[in-house]
Length: 490
Ligand SMILES: Cc1cc2nc3c(=O)[nH]c(=O)nc-3n(C[C@H](O)[C@H](O)[C@H](O)COP(=O)(O)OP(=O)(O)OC[C@H]3O[C@@H](n4cnc5c(N)ncnc54)[C@H](O)[C@@H]3O)c2cc1C
Image (cartoon, rainbow, N blue to C red):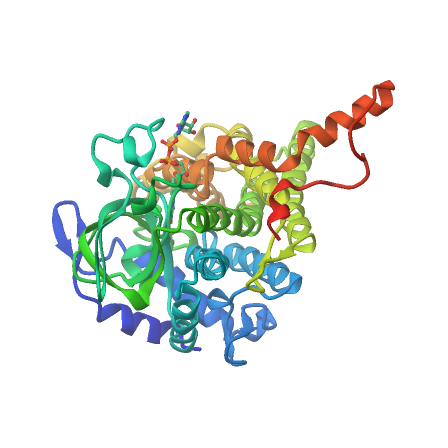
């Protein structure tokens, strides 16, 4: 395992292929730095005794100790530890820990590449294992580029006016394949070592060109990253950990990119391609049950702080509001635990968390976020939007006025009042706050997609049979058990 500084040194050596605001930029551009600092923490936390080894796993391939973000889950305990690690790390940094996408993509491909080899006699799982040895030994940071730009939404890949609107194979050669297309919303690609690329959706038998998966360095020839970097507003004097956060998302363009066969994990096998898409989403929603529990807890804490500083923390409506928020935190986290406890083992040996619990936890988190913003905004009051600029609090003439008129609960100093409301403003009334709101809704899949998965996997006929039996209507089959359609695969 390496340190955060060693990770930074490696990222600094990547070929420049990142564009931002019309310019080719350095990966260590000040606007990107906040995200790199968060990612570096995933290395340092693994060695931090305070975390009691939750971020360290044992490789099932080499038997070596590895960073859990490079691990393929081999047990229920692995899934529980992954979720716990995600929550603890997110609580500590105050936001997304950013390294789960690559791990989730690799776990999905461990299953899909293995199943492809069993069905088609291909060589992908061998590629996968060789790749994993390198990823684990070098402690690489990977991200996942799943989401295609998708063009006209109801049209399938082959029906789009431009077939590149879903990334596809345009040529097969003896030494590899050529792919063309672009992946949207690709988080942290700018400071990743390598990118895991897999399909957005299941593919029909005539969509072989789009059934492709591979892992490739982020600075590989032909890859262009059009990046958007986001951070809370920078501070002039009132330094705070929250203002040092950052994250990047890119449109990652693959312009006729050559992928050597040893890096290819699927190419034309439509059924396993669908599994890769589905399982990445599933693993990622399981990760969300850890990170969103942390983010919801931070919102709950901020709301409680606003109430205390406004002197209204004993009001009954405030306590009811906080109880509802705590309940959301616990239900999201509980869904992840339930998903791990009810995991099944795929043929590859990888453990798959329960689909409906993952989707239910992620859907709840995505929909609850608007209520969390509303609760904090309601209890903090309008100052979260209209707080005077930071410089005014340090202006010779204005400071005494602002320190005097910001006072609410007399037990809290003017500076702490200022600090708290600056945090609330950053969280809700800033470009960063708006961006996080949409991130929480769509990242990992929009709630509507989780509804589709929940309905698909629940087996509604079983539920109807329960009702029919109680009504005395004849039923076909047994009402005993809890059903998951998906697990008929394993
Ligand atoms: C901050 C952020 C970070 C992200 N990071 C990553 C990442 O690292 N890697 C990655 O792969 N993805 C990432 N995503 C992508 C995320 O998974 C998608 O945003 C999500 O799946 C929704 O896709 P979309 O944004 O293309 O929206 P759309 O697919 O355009 O969906 C918008 C709405 O359109 C409707 N809709 C869509 N298709 C249909 C249809 N066929 N029929 C009827 N209605 C339809 C639905 O109501 C949906 O809610 C990220 C997203 C965000 C916001």
